[in-house]
Length: 477
Ligand SMILES: *Cc1c(COP(=O)(O)O)cnc(C)c1O
Image (cartoon, rainbow, N blue to C red; front, top):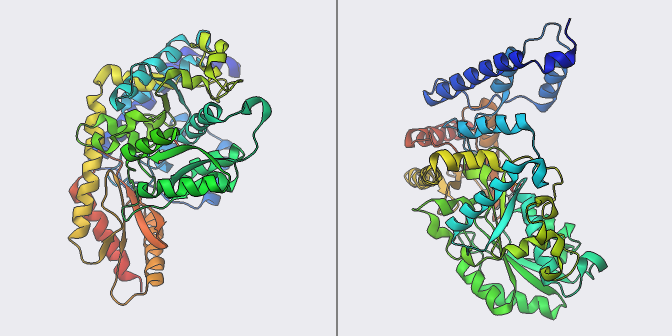
């Protein structure tokens, strides 16, 4: 009789279980690609789902294979052509294979000697991103776990560099602030509050009809903040904003920052990936002038959650986040130990995030990313075109990338009735599971929101979505 530990570490069981799983996943992908796999999600109330997994743990006869199969079925299917909800990328299978390798080796990357390949590959990955964004050759940075943490990390570096005193040692007096478009992702607001700047530390700049920052108002808001005793140290450009995928005018923001000696941070969590698309990278014009940029690999670049690049135009600035002194010149230890990334990241032990990404660069080159990003952004334009051809739909904005917001409209309904109708539509779609879409409120109105995530999505799927919305919309009184 083998002990649980012997069983758990048995090489043959590993071989057998993993081969079965890989076969299962290959079949799964094939079924999705041949459109044999429906629906995109199997909605069940969370109370039911939590109970199910509790019950499974106490099952009499257990089968690892059944368990894996069940788990796949209950998951949302991100490769599915009807996956159009939150911003998540389907994964390139090779990235998943590399993840298995990474998880198996279980090397950390906070300290070089605990994971030499994974930590050193980060430098190559960051260099590729910086190159695609047109940042200088002496830029640098690292990978971290998600855009939210990445924004906080970069903004802490901005604070440390721009604050007049040594905030790391003395704390700060609470008069610091940054400026950002009112449509920006909540993680910027959260970072400001975590840094202790409070509500008045985030100055929200209104947006234009296409939800882009009104850069013509920057001067006015800046002067007002100064008159109120605020010390604005940074402007955050969104590339793009989350709700509508609007790209702020980074050149205009960079000019403003240059003239006023402010730190320019670009939140490119979603749209930073467009730097790999020959067709769409112009939307990022000016990004090369940023002091810091973040970009999620898991949103548009076929990589597992959560893998985020934090890039600094001057790699020395990347040592600022947890700097003891206000100038990087004094932060010698961290610089001398450039290979120990934990000196610069929130994580102490960090997964080898670079390995799946590096594997994609290695096997396919950046043209894989170009193909994918261009395809899903083209889909954004196609959906807008189809919406414009139908009378009972209304676009919220001209889509710039793969995010499109719109609503279903019906004659004789008031605005609030239409809000309720669209909420009902989204709820019904979620429960039937034929499509995955989400919703958002813009200018006080309820919209349906799609992020076209799957490269398998074609015009026919987009038309089917609109048909389905129309059928549901007509049915609801
Ligand atoms: C998604 C997103 C974030 C947050 O990134 P996570 O990886 O989900 O933490 C930040 N900013 C923008 C603009 C985003 O779209």
